[in-house]
Length: 112
Image 1: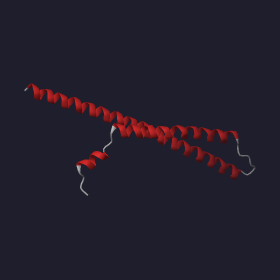
Image 2: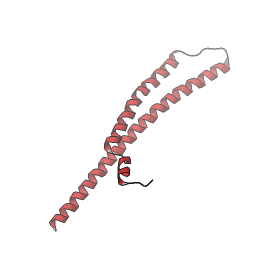
Image 3: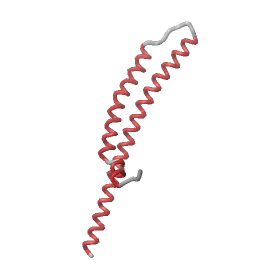
Image 4: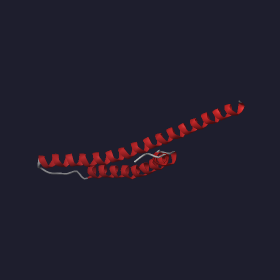
């Protein structure tokens, strides 16, 4: 499987693809943040009551696990959105710099 120029071109990130990914990740992060907040609020409003210390410790561990995992999922999508946004800015900056340098070299060729 040799890499042809068309294969390399289709796999390279573009500003459009990275911004679309950032928008999708941000769109997924917002409902996850709301869900995490609702889960934590629900656990705070409905405490587990029991005389058994083992049952209380298991309930606390499960609440911590559920809230932690939902918050982790929210954080992952937020970081992905920020990273993709930064990547799109970097690609845009590189495209602008390469366009400026190519126009400068063309103007130098024309003057000679």
